[in-house]
View (cartoon, rainbow, N blue to C red):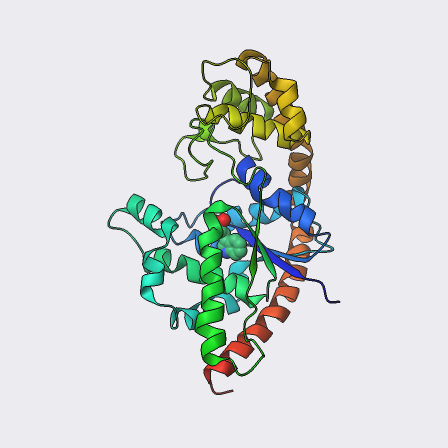
Length: 335
Ligand code: TRP
């Protein structure tokens, strides 16, 4: 078995929304047919900003269940919880000690998040990208599917592997860490807020109406789309920079219906918002129905969920232990 390997993950902070699905998880579902796919729930990343200890475990489990509900096949891919594999934090420490501080201080996401945290910025928030590098490098990942906003983090993982581990501690041809490549998700890699087409749909937006959660019931979806921001123009279209909301909602429509961009834009080019919104609403409700059904069955079946996570953990353990050993040996630790 010489299949190329893919790794990815999402944080268990609050309910996953259609942006997580259309921008990330939907792509993993396709990738699992061609690659060995490992997906984790990155719960250690979730505590890099202040978090609620009473909901972390529940959110972690429900995120894992949503992976399956969205179509990740536990028989072919490995689903696991990041904090259950101790090698993540251990490799993170080793990488911390070779990564220059100024590489971290210039990370865009850190700067943005730190701004929001005021004087409450943890070292964990600064270290977030190194932990993410550890996630990726532990599994000798060939490819990491990432959206635009995570590109810089992947670049960092590549730099750490190449410049700070392989070239400093490697001997000859044999690389210690595999240098991963990004798989940039094109269409729909960025779903925007329903309240502002210039901002990304986000779990941390205080306004619930800015996103559609994967578990929102039909009447809530209807309400949110009804309230979604529009503009004064007639007809839906892609690519008009003056109309980010039209671009975003038409994009969502093309993805949830599976029509693709050309057909969706032909179908809606003459529609006013009043006609388009109910059609979009039905399309979103229909697309989420099977996911919600599968989720509600699985979340009740703790036995099956545990079985899936134990299987995934076994495979993750196997790969990560051997990578960690390679790095520790290269760094000169006593066996
Ligand atoms: N930082 C990623 C995000 O917010 C989540 C993440 C953590 C991740 N570790 C990862 C993604 C490893 C891909 C691979 O989307």
